[in-house]
Amino acid sequence: GIVTGISYAAGDSVEAGKAILSVYGDSSVSMSVSVSEDDIANVEVGQQASISLTAYEGETFDAAVESITASPARSNSSSVTYAVVVKSTGDLSLPGKIYEGMSGEATLIRKSVPNVLNVNNRAIAFRDGVSTVKVRNRGGDVETKTVKTGFSDGTSVEILSGLEEGDTVLVESAVTAK
Image 1 (cartoon, helix red, strand yellow):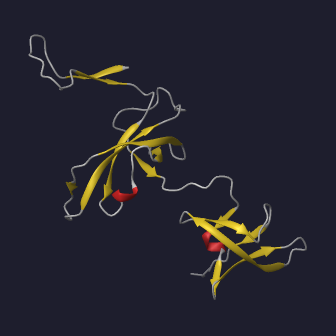
Image 2 (cartoon, helix red, strand yellow):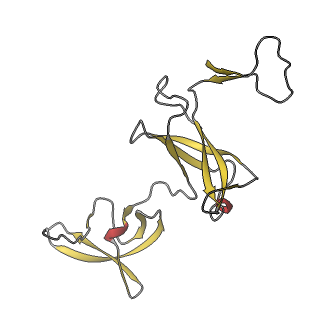
Image 3 (cartoon, helix red, strand yellow):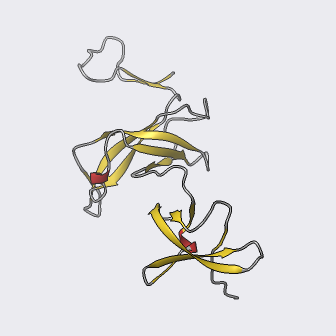
């Protein structure tokens, strides 16, 4: 690592519990994020997370919640937030390229469903309690299929039945001329 700060000078008395020096190393990344009181009940130490750094767009690092402060910090809007420290858990793919103070964001993962068939939420039509999608069949025609949906992350939704891997699902959008 690299020494980034020294708290004492030669001859100073050393206080118990106070850091003597700070050492920077890039073998892991940790960041403190503010979590609102509305969301803090859904956060726990050890919870799966990911970290992305602004300087490395599209690159994410596996992480976990390392700690949650018990004392709140108040913002200007009088909402209560808590500091949550998220730390990377895997090998970093950018050794020597991560520097103290870089900005980024952490995503706290509440639920993960691996190896599922999913489609964009915009592809699902919901009417009278039935979910459907439009699919282009082998002949090139468009047909409507009824699907059973599962977990959604807000962008994609799990398809439990009604589609097969490889189906071409259509998403309708409105285009306007200016």
